[in-house]
Length: 439
Image 1 (cartoon, rainbow, N blue to C red):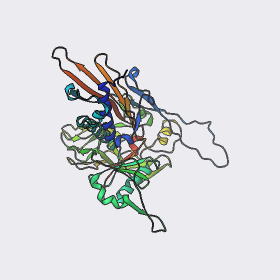
Image 2 (cartoon, rainbow, N blue to C red):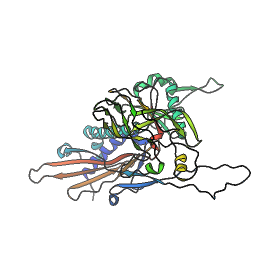
Image 3 (cartoon, one colour):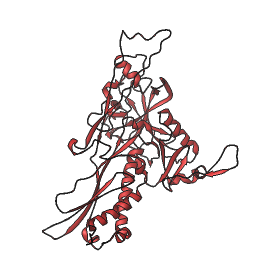
């Protein structure tokens, strides 16, 4: 007796295979499925994870440290991760009713097109989130990456943020390829005339350069700046304690963020989510070596805002929070010193300067550490009526669920395809993403 493979499963397999072949950028992200994440229906697809504390070191000469006065405080942070995003497609069942074997399913142009579209949608969605999640930028906004020096500047910024070699990936536009091709295709080995080809191992669009993978794609997002002008800090002493910003509370990505009061943006001006700006007199601080990095700290706007008639925003959320370095080792100030982000709090009326011009648009290119973000996914449960099928991909744990159902009143049979995933930023992940531009 021959056991027939369910027709809906044939269609699902073909679409899923085409979809997986279309995924490039998203495969390079860190995926978390039900086997590696605690997210599930019982906790409403949300989970809170701890952020390890940092401590100050003590140095003495000729004797051990006297701890009788005070010991360092421990502050454990927390970030929330969630999964509440789905992508779906729906069709009349007649589109696929004649497909009866796996060869026919794999050759069907309609199924291949559905899979390609779905893969491109996921790639664009993941890249759109990841490339704009960080607070750092190098070069002039919107300028093509037309030299190796532009990449080197972004690489240096990644190293300043403590990102390890071997985890960095660059995502650029195909329009950047011609100027960089001579670096991507061949290098000269020191003290020899031997030339060697350096090609990526994952896909034809991925190459090696500066010890990292470079990917060229058409799926880069376009960022459009709001109508805001450069503004100013409204009120001094708006720095915060780490203990006040170490908990993400109910929103993913709010770890190490705070709100500030600012004005001067223009009447009813808009400020876009992801805008990067600097504050006069506020330099970035390296809390690992306990010294200023020697450049202005760059802050990212979290959320979208519209200024009041007077051009003010009373609660502008930014990353990173303004945590000032000091020489204290104990109590809240000691915790602040271990987690410091800046060398000084901004003064009242300190100028806020946006790095992207008002009302301009351009592609976002970026260097990304693989551990900067994570993509949560889960297998959707079968629906209680009709016919169900599902297929899990091999390259990433994304699962496609299909469901065939009918309307008894009209006799129409329909098919839908759904997959669940959501890109979330890791606690310090924003520091590990640098938007890269040319000079």
